[in-house]
Length: 273
Length: 184
Image (cartoon, rainbow over all chains, first blue to last red; front, top):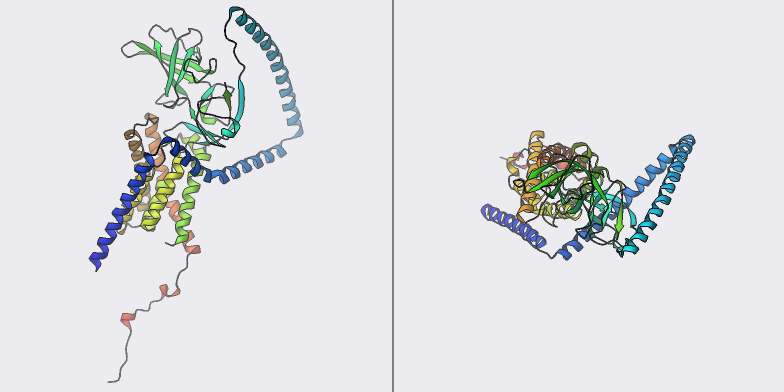
């Protein structure tokens, strides 16, 4: 009797093990669009918690506002007004340059560049797994987001939109293996591809496939070149930290110090072409 | 272990995954996020039945993968393996000993990310791996080790507070030692 019970128990163990292995295999072999929908469905279970976290954040901010003294607010207001005036003057000057640029482009017959359309989003989650560099935004398809839109801060490029749900979307950050960026060193016009992060410092990324004759010096500015078809040209990425020849001297590889601080992202801009 | 306890384990798994994604204090401080699911599997493996272990592994894995760039379902199998192994060996494990809890927490928290990464690499994915990953692995293992006894304390307290205990459990009466008087 005891032996039969033990045998049945062992059989149930193997059935459970087999069932879980089968379920894993089925889930891993589902078509990508089904997996994306399933992920969104399971992820939507967390929506009440997102709401709760957002409300508590707002409450904390309100409490902080109540503590701030009137003199501090007046001081901040004064400083912001001054900054606003400076930026207005800069914008006036820039508009003049833009008009001149458009006129010259028209004279030569070049295609006109469109001004950037941006939408502000808030980072709500970071990837719980340490081996991916992704974050989730509080903007989704109902806000007009779609895959492969560039995401940036006022400092520089952050990444690209990799998956879009109705109210949330996933952004894969620069330095992840799934986010390659065509880049250009502004001073020398050398082009390359931004790849993985440095093994020891997450704020550095590798700029590969540069010409072996590239003359790079630390501090040179790196921007998107617009060649990859995803990121428009002219978004700052960072500055050259150092460079070295690779592949027996066939190419040069540089390390770029990212302009945007990816570990303390709070609000980002999504760029619509 | 009753149904209420199983529900509590599932709820803690849900909260743990959310906290791992939403709160980044430890990540910013130590450079790695701690995963609480392996520690939960240790508790489930030592205290719950096979259906609960399966449920926690499946739902915990799905929760984690849905908020991550991991392929959906890849974390389920490593989590289940931890729970299954501990479940099959639990007659040999002194569950109430702090040493046993920490060693199991350390081993499980080291095993789950390693097997998940192995599965990812086998499936042709390209996770970001570097020397920093070794540090992250150490932080995850030590964090899981520290979290395991805390989870045991939490669940045992919950069990003591809310579970029904029959009154005769404390009685010293043994039917095989009953003195029968007869007329002779």
